[in-house]
Image (cartoon, rainbow, N blue to C red; front, side, top):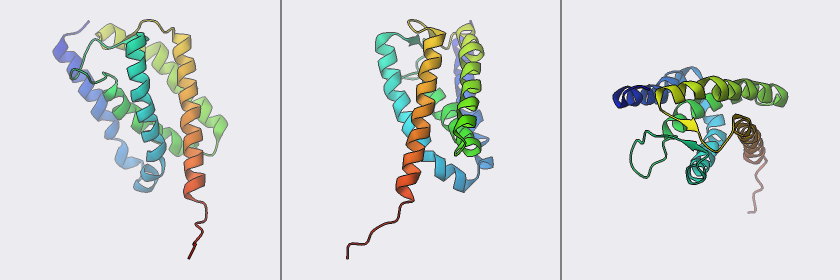
Length: 161
């Protein structure tokens, strides 16, 4: 366990560091994949509220009362990481799934262990296997959302005048 002061430093770094890579994504790519990533951020917020009630996991560090503690993860590494993954894998579904499996496995079996060690987060009523399934469902959901978003956005507009 580390002190509350150190936990907050880790949380702030976890939020800020991914954003340092954002300029390298490219403005056009960032704008292209932001809708799918934002959709998943809102999905994750709802999931976090449900998870808190069902005690799937536990975040003993609260940024503020009544705000889910996953927000630094969601609006830090998740949103930027999602855009990076979509940038290099969108249109190549098998590669997208493989990349997400590697990233999600790293999170579930290595990063989550570190989170528990520093006292930031731990699983309670959710096994690592079920967390992996949840990650897989979210990965597919984001890809499908982005696919249909682009399909709808790029369809020819019919002028009714």
